[in-house]
Length: 153
Image (cartoon, helix red, strand yellow):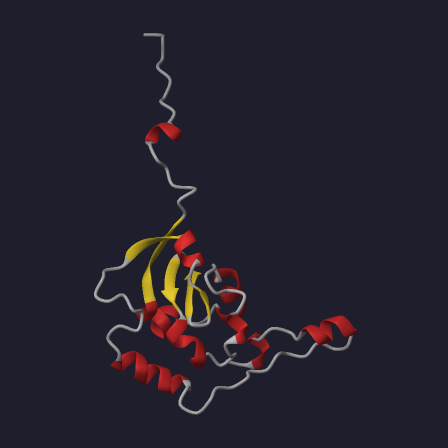
């Protein structure tokens, strides 16, 4: 990763000076990418699914997991329990504070499109988001138009 993929600092935008790239904050000893990979490979249930299969999860349920100590996110329609990974992120925890319990796909794609998310946090997958407001309750809500019959024979 190079610093050109990081967001521009707000102070440079406001002052009109030449924009500077935000810097990685770094991680504490024991929280490097290598440490994350070791933890990921050694752990059996980082997502805390407790043996349950992947499931459909409503946006409302994701929204309830909105703190540093209980952080779920939506990324490309998948729901992840990001809590175990937060301290390993090289940008720091504060970068996620506006995304706890929310969809962060747009922000992720803006800065990390090249990251293989399945390899990095795939083991934190809880399930797939279901938007209850948009789900069909019956087929009658959105009838399929039938082709018109020709009256001429």
